[in-house]
Image (cartoon, rainbow, N blue to C red; front, top):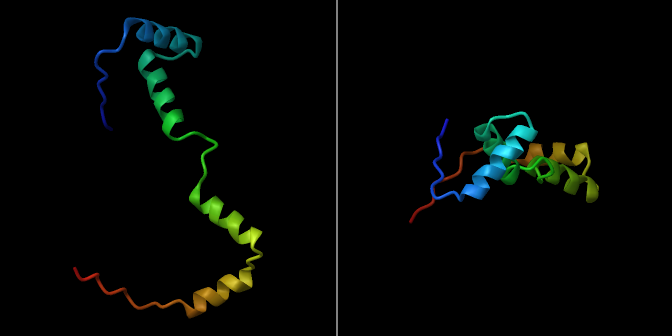
Length: 83
């Protein structure tokens, strides 16, 4: 796992983190991990697979349509891009 050091954290912010951690029954370090996790990966975030499924339903895509796509899909490996 990665390690993160936060420098120049104001005393009042550190104190607020300690209080918040105590309210949640966690260490300050565990509280900071939870805050960071919820900030960058909130539970209500849009998940790509779910968004694509919803779009397919919205436009009326059926299982039969998907089967047709799978049958006509080009199975040959792609050629590398030349630069």
